Structures are given as structure tokens and as C-alpha cells.
Image (cartoon, rainbow, N blue to C red; front, side, top):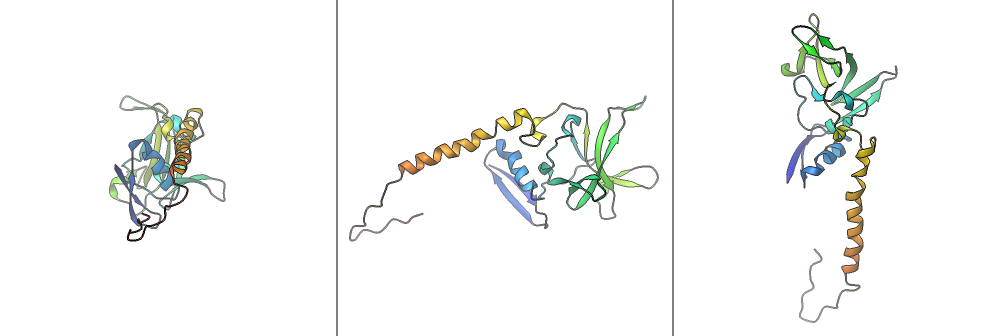
Amino acid sequence: MLQIEFITDLGARVTVNVEHESRLLDVQRHYGRLGWTSGEIPSGGYQFPIENEADFDWSLIGARKWKSPEGEELVIHRGHAYRRRELEAVDSRKLKLPAAIKYSRGAKVSDPQHVREKADGDIEYVSLAIFRGGKRQERYAVPGGAAGNGQGRPAPQGQPAQARPQATAARPAARPPVQPGQEEETPF
């Protein structure tokens, strides 16, 4: 059995048991929708394939998309708002990087030094996630948003439904009467 430690949106630490690794992302999605997070943002932000950016499931990291009153689309994570920034490809003798999309915000005094990145001048920022290169991974997409993603979900939900009638049929219709001198069986 696996365990994930989450930090709730109110700061409480909660450990959740996961019965099998195949359920890990489902559990992260479930609690992530509540704003619960697991782990810390890595230096430079989470790294994902650029092909996942359009339908990325932000609940996997405890974040959510939000539209400001001005119409700007932001990502909210642990009470901070991250802006979407498109980065051009870099092709120089020293460095070659493909185009990327980064979600970042200005650094605050309370941010740990290892997550701060330097920009031009004295400006520092914190990256939540960067989408660059790589091959699309369906496990990062919003469930049901892609053709292949929704197909795997009905089977697990259907199995318990099939098990319920069998369990109901196996139950006796009525409990046998308790004989004198015999103790009644505990119901649990």
C-alpha cells in the first residue's frame, strides 16, 4: 500500500492510503480538486510536455485555473496566482531550447531561496510549471478530455456495481432466531 501526505488548503497535514499504484493519480486528482497539495514545487517548477499544456489537469498538483475580473487566465496554487508566459525558442552556441509555456509569479520575501529564479535586474520570480518539448502523456490530461482517457474509467466503476448484486444475493433473507443460552452474533 502506498501513502501520500497532503497539505490541506488550511495547512493541516493528512496522510492518505492508496491501495494500488494504478489509483495514485486518481487520488491526487480527488484531493487536488480540494486545493490539497502533496510535495513541494521543485526548483524551476514542475516539468511537463508542451503538448499537455492545453488540457493539463491542474488538480494533479492541487491547483486550478481562474479568470481574473480583467479577463486574464491564471493558475491558483496554495493561494498564489501564476501567470501564463510564452517563451520563445532559444538557439545559440551556448544554449538550444525549444519554445515553452511557463506559469510563474513574482517572488515574495517568504519564498524559499531554492525556488526563486533571477530575471533581468533585481527581479526574481517563482515558476510553478513549465511545458516544454517531450511527448504528450495522457495521464496528465483532464480525464474525459481526450478520447483514450475516458475509456479506462468506466470499467473500475462498473466492477463494484456488478459486485453489489452478488453480495445482496448471498445475504440471508432473515436472521435465524437466537436459541436460549446462545449469544447473539455481533453485527460487525
